[in-house]
Length: 341
Image (cartoon, rainbow, N blue to C red):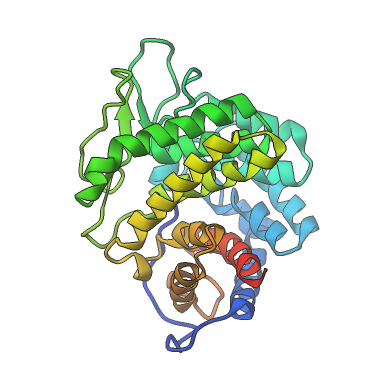
C-alpha cells in the first residue's frame, strides 16, 4: 500500500531490457539501504511506526538473509497486538489496519514462529465475516446482522493468510467470495470500472459505486491504486496452486485461475499502469501467471525509480521510501526467480 515519491533515476537507460540479474542488483542495493535503517537500533528508536518494519522480514528472507529476517521480525513483532493502529500511514491506521498482520503472519510462517503467526492470523480474522470469508475495511466484524463494508483487497488478505496456515475451509470461503465479487463487477469492468467494495446489506453483494481510488479502479484514468486488484489476483493464483495438495478443488482452481487472468487483463489495459509506482503487485501477478512481458515491463519501470541511496523514492528518509522499498524488494526477488525458472 506504500506510495512512492518523485523520480531521480538511478538506472537511466530505460531503452534496454533489464534482465533478472539487473533485478537482483537493484534488490541488493535496496536491501543495503534497508539494513542501515530497520536493523539499526539507534535508527529504530527514533522511528516508532509499524510502517517501517512489517514488510522487512520478508525482504530479508527473499534475499537469503535469514538471521537478518529474524532480527527484523523481532522488531516488527512489537506491533503484533495493534497492527496498523496509530501508524502515520493513513491507509494502515484507518482503512487496512489488518494489513501489517498479513505480512507478519507470512514472515512468521516462513521463519517457523507458529505462535506469532497464529496471533497475527487471529487478529486479522476479527476483520472477516465468518460465514463468507469476506475481509472488512476500517472496523472489525461486529456480529451477525451488524452493518459492514467488505473489500476485494481485504478479502485477499483473508485468503492469503488462510492458505499460509492451511485453514482450508476459510480459504475456500474467501476465494469463493472473491469470485462472487468479481462476477458482480463484470458488467462494470466492461465499461472501464472495477468497484472494490460492497456492503453486508444483502446476500446479493451490493457494490459501493463510488469513484475515489480506494473504491474504484478507473481503467481510463492514470494514477489508480492498481495493487488493490492485483493482490486479489495473486491470492487466487496462489490458492489455485494448492489443488494438488487438496486445498483447492480442481474445479474451483480453474475458476480461480480464470478470474485472476481476467483481473490481470483488466489491469493491463488500465491507463498509466506501466508507468506507476503502484503497479508492483501487477508485475508480481503477471509473473505468477507466466506473463513475462508484462512483469518485465512494470519491473523495468520500477527500477527507473531507484535512487543512489538504494531506495525507490526521492525522499530517502521518508516513511514511504522505507515502506515502498521493502515491498519492491520482495516482488523483485520473486519476479526474478519466476523469470529465471
